[in-house]
Length: 318
Image (cartoon, rainbow, N blue to C red; front, side, top):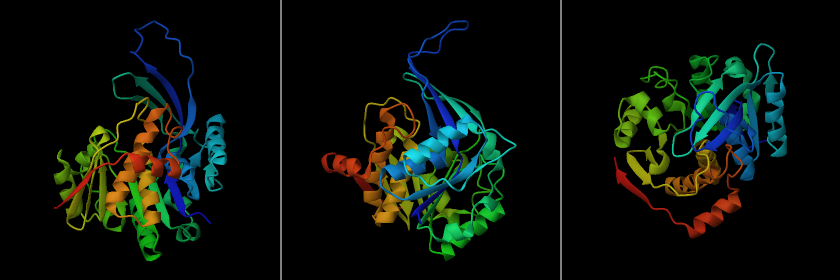
């Protein structure tokens, strides 16, 4: 049986670039390649974990099309268990076109596709209780998620002593914690980025974000801050960690790679300082190539890198 189960959004990604600029209207810009890869939070985290030697299953929905085959081929290549991925009739596989422009943030064109069909009812309790860690990725962009059922699932995991890790994708214009707050007491590690934490809390400062999430019932919170590193809060204490600098080709998969590092740390029983260092190294490694998982460190590569690249982590009472 796998140690980790990854559930959530599954996407076929097509990467365009890096480009020096978008071509003007009516002009053609020739590219050497348009790489097509497996993507989406659940797929990325599962593949990254497999690259780190963790046994992992993935759960989600895809269509009956060639894009689904892109995902299945990637899962099989990396020994990710995918027998619980369901092909649905009513939707095509979700797809994203990622535009990579030099010295600019990424642009996305996205279809939700079969992620519309994913629901808590598709997660087997028998499978769930066999895990050590359950990860849900892409919360708030899966319309089929019933939040009452999700809360019950998280409570079930708590009773079964299965650690839970949840990250989110916040739709434009979404604010507040009305749906999130009832879930937080049952999530072991909550992993938003700073923009997402701002949408939930209304605060820009990471200290204030951690306080607001803690007041809402959160346990361990880790907020990723891109090139500014990460902050974490637990039991009245806060940790701040820098970020590794690598030659960035495409930052698309860095957040999911960071999450995979956190999950491996949970399995290893590491403290938060070691967790932040390790996850930061794995997250940074994802940026070295186009695609979300191609350049992600193995566990051995990450451990070797950490041995020669110290990263300070500071702590304070909060």
